[in-house]
Image (cartoon, rainbow, N blue to C red; front, side, top):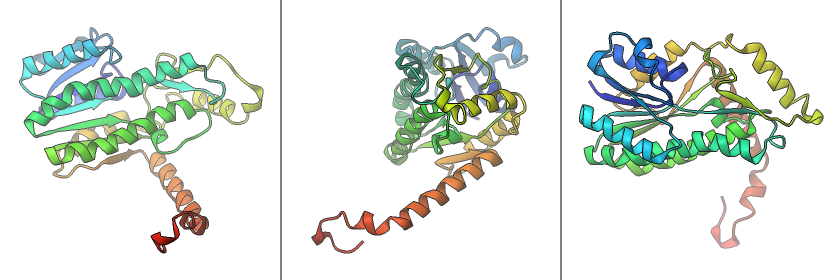
Amino acid sequence: MGVWFITGASRGFGLELVRAALARGHRVVATARSSAPLGELLPGAGGDLLALDLDVTDQEQVRSAVAAAVDTFGRLDVVVNNAGRGLLSAVEEASDEAVRAVYEVNVFGTLHVQRAVLPILRAQRAGHVINISSVGGLVGSAGWGIYASTKFAVEGFSEALSHEVGPLGVHVTIVEPGYFRTDFLDGSSLHTGATVMEDYDDTAGAMRRRARAVNHAQPGDPVKAAAAIVGMTEAEQPPLRLLLGKDSVRAVEAKLARLHADIDAWREVSAATDHDEAGAA
């Protein structure tokens, strides 16, 4: 059995991942801004659980948490970057301050953790980095532009990372959940822009109303999702991407169809931009 390091572990996906990993016999380092509730939420975990306070935007705290994990359990096998922050706002409505706050957690926080754990995984020539993205990391939609852009960033550096560390025995998987019944749409996780522009009422405004309507009635089951993620790590060749939820699959398939349609419709224009000596496409 392995050692898991999970960020954002005090609720939602993170908490269910801790439970699922412990149930499979793994040892878990569960981190959160405040890890105090984890003892009550996870009774009976005993020495298989190490709960640590961790703000992923604090590089020194990240390094200290990773060092404590290795000091306690001797190694790391699976690292889950789950800590995240949401922003529901039209792109134009979002202030620099709001945008930076989301990037600090979703992008730079993930990079902080990766930089701290990768020397350990590389030295082991084994390990698995799981970055929790979103269907919004592959499909942009009104109201989620800034949040989606952070997940698009995660998708990009994770895919590149997989090529860099794959030859060293380290797997990378990007997880793209759709709407799951967690507290992500609560005010504690999801932030909304202070500026609301009337011109976007039918687009970003409609998404704000939809988010309120579906909160705690989302189709995805986080317990099943956690079990799927833990099971995926036991595959000999885990996937680079794992879509979770029928809504995520539908949205990504529709995106792929649109992408193929654009490629086909504009193929001649695309090919015509090469130097003549490059030959036919």
